[in-house]
Amino acid sequence: LVLASASVVVDIRNLETDYQNRMVRVFRYVETHQLTDPARQEDLAALLESVGSVLAVEWDGQVRYSARDQEHFDLFYRSTDYTILEQDSLRFFVDLKPLNRDSAATNLRYFLVIVILVLGYVFWYSPRFALTVTDPIHVMRRGMDEGTYNLEVLIPEEHRQDDVYLLARSFNRVFLPMKDRDRAGAGTEADGSPLTLENVGDLFS
Image (cartoon, rainbow, N blue to C red; front, side):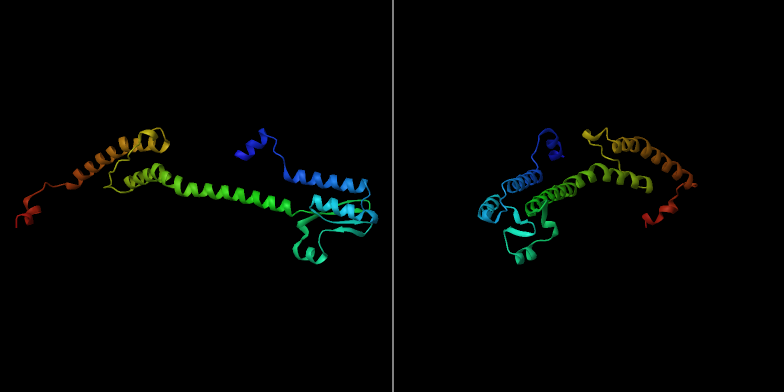
C-alpha cells in the first residue's frame, strides 16, 4: 500500500522502461552509423561491450557481434531470457535477465510483506482477537448452554462500545438475572414436599 501510494505521488522511474529505451537508442545508433559494416566490427564490439545487455547482432542473416558462443546461449538462456529488436535486416538479441532478476526481487519483496503480515496476524492479532472476541463469546455460549454456569463477561473499559461487549453487557444485566430467576422458580416447583430430617438423616449417623 505504501509503495502503491508513493508511486501515485512521486514519479518513480521504471527499470523496464529505462532498459527498453536504452536498448532502442543503441539499436538506432548502430543502424544510423552503419556499425554493422564488416570494416567497423571493432567499433561495434566496443560499443556493445560498453553498453552491455546485447547478446548478439545480426545483419542480413550474418552474425556481426556475439557476446558469447552458441554453446553458452544454449546452456544458460531460455526463450524468456532474451528478446529481439528487429528492423529491416538488423536484429538485436537483448538480454532480459536483468529485468527478470528485478521482477523476481520485487516478487520476493511482496512475498516477504505477505509473510510479515501473516505472522503479525498469528502472533499479535490472534491472541488479541481471542481476548476481545473469542473468550467473551465462549463465556456467553457456555452461559446459555449450561444451566449452572453463571460467570459474567468482564468488560474492559477501552472496549465498552464494541459490539461484542454491548452484547456481553446485555448478557450480564439481562440474561444471567433472568436465568437465575428461572432456575429459582424451577427449583421451587420441583421441590414439591418440604425437606425433612429423613432426607438428611445420614448427616447425623
